[in-house]
Length: 283
Image: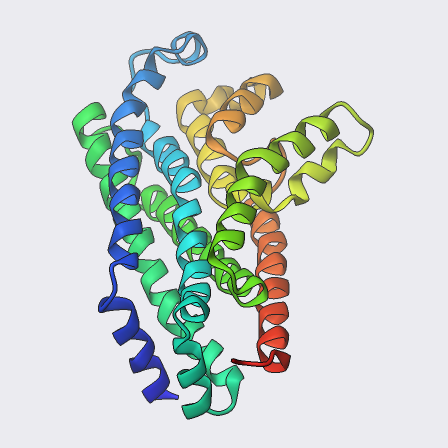
């Protein structure tokens, strides 16, 4: 198994894919952190603050995470489909047995790369926050670590979903279209359609909503608690929903609930990819 994992790392770092997708993660995370300074000028914040420093860096890290995880799922999917496209999967499966061990090695290797993506996201978002907000815009260190840790979890799980999807589809173009079509179009339509219905609660269980809640349901309540202080119980549901709509998650849904839901999605995709890989003919 160690040899397979080493081989996967060799494949990763001798190709351009990992850093080509890491670059936009760094840039977009920095821009999200930098642009977070504008949040302090919103009417909602101005009404309930009295000149204290705002921990908006917690929110902007959530924003950056939920915007850049698309690159993590693309990384995972293209890692598998690229091998089918280049036919290197044939040699891999002929020299490594069983096939499940190959997929397991990919999961281990790309989990580590996903952690790198998560760290770059957290650091670049924080650097942008320092430029736009100053050192007082991040709250306490434990808060920053909690939001950053939730971001790492989200990044890893999205990468695992991508690997499972890639193993199911095996075609790079199809995988990219499915990922972008679902995240950018379909889920937004499904969420809007459910919002005004008696089953609106189902939106919390959609993959994208669940993933965004891993970070958003940590950062938003934490931000409001710091800003409102003793007045937190009197902050309206609308204020929560306004922030959640921008920074992820949903009112009243716990972050660990979002985590469990999305872990379920990741497990289904990985298991599906595992079974498909075991039964597929390799040319």
